[in-house]
Image 1 (cartoon, rainbow, N blue to C red):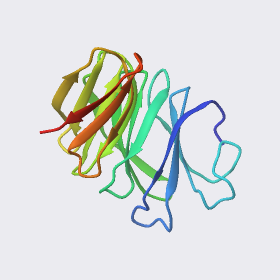
Image 2: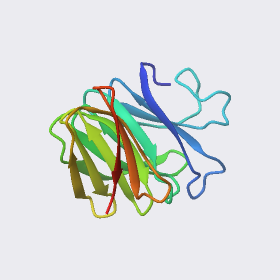
Image 3: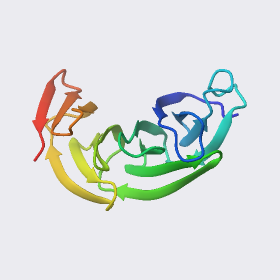
Length: 173
């Protein structure tokens, strides 16, 4: 089992062939580990590991499950990139796409419906992505570094917290 500092985690919906959810943890060393939550307690000290993935240089900073695509999740890291993954069941996890667009490390990510996500970076931007096409839809310039981002269930409103102790709501087109 993988050992190290866990920086983020998410529970993903069951994919084809999986009897239950999976837990995905991102580590400071850049690894993503996909755990079986039914094998005792999911965690680095347990043997219930579906897969260990080399995901990002300089740590996996954030991970989010896509709400309308079972088994799919997106990770962001210290290498300024986002990666779209799919857990297809058991030990099979594949990388679907790598998204490049931030000038500094990706600090936060929120998944939206219709295969979209928004990421926040130390480059003081929030980027709205189309994960299916692998392209940037919109860039929101910020005055401060976004520390966290969240989206409404319908994906029309974003909220982001910043290092200057502010919170901003954004309406998406």
